[in-house]
Length: 426
Image 1 (tube, helix red, strand yellow):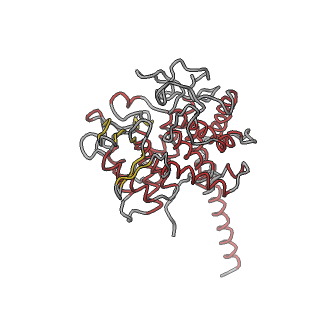
Image 2: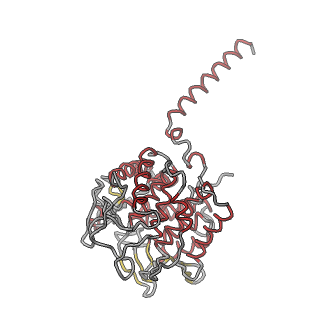
Image 3: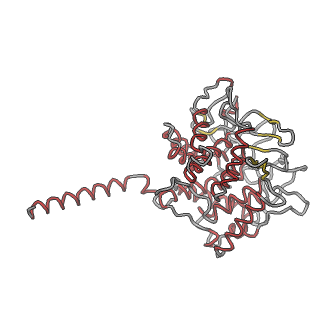
């Protein structure tokens, strides 16, 4: 080969590499290069705050053991092959908690627990025929073995699908349950819902937003805490059902929606809203920041860490909501507000009496916003969560279900143990 020809090949190779590098610079992945989906790196804020790896692992394991195995557990096994998560305070099992339990199990590699909850959910809650086929009854009474409601709550299906996709990636589909097949069954059923029997897609296809309930008029409004753009990115990546662009569009729509739903001063959002983000009152309560709302900081932090596609707004949001809660006392802020930060006229009961509390669930999710708050150099909210206890209040009130699950989720996030589970590579 002549020297001239060698030089020509070298110049052509360099030109191609430069073109490839330029193209890479234009891709969204490069813009979000530090996000976990692209880097595979998850920050451990507890470690950054000065706690040791041993202490952190023990705290996460203790929270899991308390909730799934301890004397105040919320997980109960049925025979050798099934189990369920219960809202013990309200004496029922909900798709919310069951699917949360599955997400905990797949993240912490508790395959037996995952499989038992899924088998129980499929047997007792999943509709096998009719207009709701593939969807789940959202509430079940384990004492009477009857459904309290036949209808679905959209977040339950959202977590079921994502957990099953993660399980498929983690454990494969040949160990007794075809996790991918079960996820696809829910999704394929969802795409057949066209209003027949008053049952619809989990997402309002016109607004590209998740519905409060995929049924009747509840198809026409939403719950901000159901907006998990990170999960929809997972669907687009791993569901492979031909609706990838729709899921990505919904993820982007959720990010914009959250800008509108969260107050520009306090950062607070209403439990329920219109698709515009405007607060939505119901016949059972006026709109305000209440229990469902607690999940929003955690969901936004997850999207920030996993995909990083809306970092500027998310960082400003974290500053606002931390400034607000700190103004109310970092160890004393209450758990329900009007969006302007004042006390609500109506207090939603948790337990037997309406009472505002410094609730563990909100303490937990507020701490996760520290991922986004570059101003919180002292990590005050992280330390506040570390020092918090999953135990009864002075008046005896105790909610290991909702407080407990949000506590465990937040510990997992802050310790870097809540991750995107990609398919195993050989």
